[in-house]
Length: 176
Image (cartoon, rainbow, N blue to C red; front, top):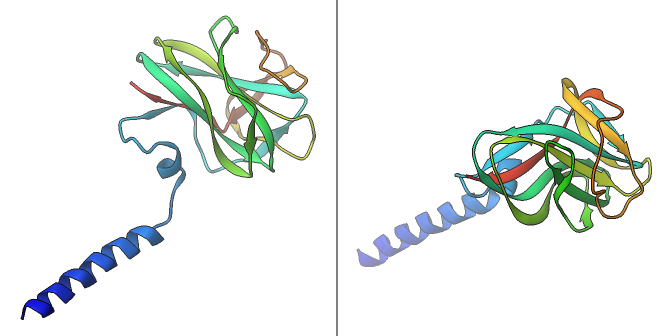
């Protein structure tokens, strides 16, 4: 009788772990493992356009509580190298990532942990200057800006030039 119980327990154990290992991983699982963490920016799987190199693309995002941003996630078309940054409401650089290799799909780009107070910020992303990769967006969902840019470190300030009616698939990850 004891062996039968042990076999039943082992069978249940292996079933649970094999199902967990085969479970489909979603962007939420990958980018926000802490259930207390949130997104600052725009997330969607319904992209309609992409914006390629030669510019640093940015969009406004409003934070309603003090929080520490630890990374920026972006839906990238193609494989390339990217940088991500956060600018204040006056469009001056607060924090930026190192140049990071990215691949097609959602990518999490680490930035130095940055404490932000409630307010409006500008999230930004750039890929190496070419026309084969860039940031995905959804048209008609918000306003994105493009500042002329030669790939390297994030510029110390950006502007609100070349507005377009697109929401960049870009968000900052934070825990309040």
